[in-house]
Length: 198
Image 1 (tube, helix red, strand yellow):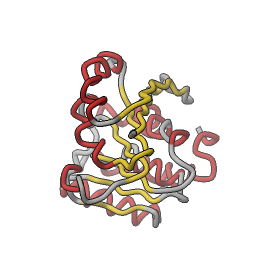
Image 2 (tube, helix red, strand yellow; image 1 turned 180 degrees about the vertical axis):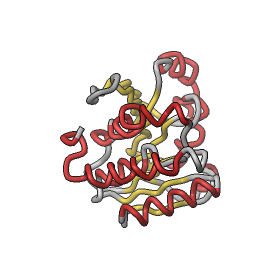
Image 3 (tube, rainbow, N blue to C red; image 1 turned 90 degrees about the vertical axis):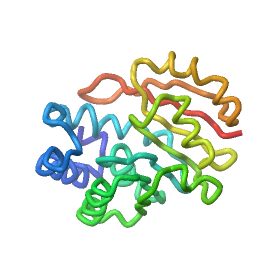
């Protein structure tokens, strides 16, 4: 576990403790999720990091409790992260986390992703547990620069989702769709879907 997070393990551990102390109380994670916090949420979030660019901007759509945005921002302090979250109580939580962990590469955006369409774009857009692939593509594709990519954490039904979304993906110029199984410590393999914006 320590090896996966490397020099950023301390920050991730601090984030985990904050979630243990306040996550359930604030309605961010259910009580059954606490014992699975590392494997199901933190390690799972870290699986997107190898797919991030060497430089540029990353938008995390529907950041919620901070997965994968906070984890990725801690692990990649060289990238600029924009955490997009419409719910005020979640934004308040993310503000606290960003301050506690000293993440000076994070900007919080209290809005829905669609509010940024035609206003801003990013090199990479990430998402986890936001929507099925067809809906997710509609939220995210307009936010991705040409040549940039979508990096989405997905579950076991990914192939069905991609089949249903194939026309939407094509229409939105999301190409070179790839399903990647990432081996992570002490947890099942994590599925990361990548798609390039043509």
